[in-house]
Image (cartoon, rainbow, N blue to C red; front, side):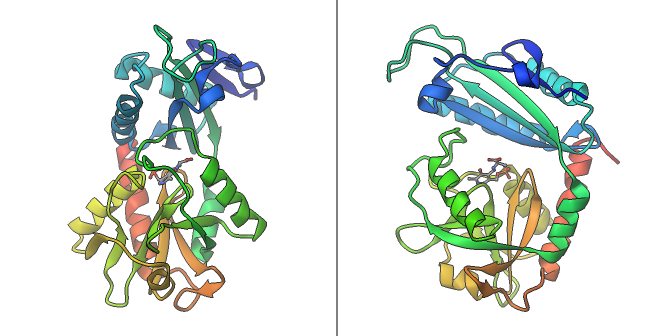
Length: 288
Ligand code: PDD
């Protein structure tokens, strides 16, 4: 079946889906993006990602090219045309096409690209049952990591170092020695007294939609949560470590920089929270 992608008002065969070489997203990373998971053919946490999209657009002063209602129609249509049941949708909005000049061009129309693909959830579940390895890297990113821009070079380079070392993800450590987040995930630890800890939201990390939902679900279940800062050494001595993102939900971590976490198996709280999160995400997608 041919893959279909959306580019500026048109549904195209994926191999013919293209933007101009003068698109500001290509020239300057002058673009924002969002990623949704698709469950049972429906977008999960639709509103949370749309709200963050609007925040990112506001931060870069890019006009929303269509109404939220129209955007929702197009997102769902891309899912439908690709017959996706379990998968993900990627949306990118750039400032548009203009002769290359760093400052904002006048009256450009933002470019919209939407792609979708299926994901093997059974394989992801198996991975979650055994847990993944991560490695640390210095956080050399800019001061506005709260904006979901496509400007991801430090994340790309760090992820490749992880890949070269057979690791699944990177945990970024800031200049003060504190864990910030992953290259494409938020990072959590469960300390020896069972408290779930994750970095406080600031301009230095992305406010994960998965993170927000998970913390809400955990607090409703009287699971103790602490937003703050913890060091790499504290992470390594945790009882459990896990990461979250729309694409993988909650993934248990069993090894950091070659150091085995606890007994080297995904912990009970990670497994419980993963199950709770997936149940909520399915509900948010309208699946009962
Ligand atoms: N990444 N932190 C970073 C740097 C991210 O890139 C992401 C998501 C997250 C988790 O956010 P959320 O829970 O809203 O997916 C945290 C997406 C999945 C990506 O870049 O593909």
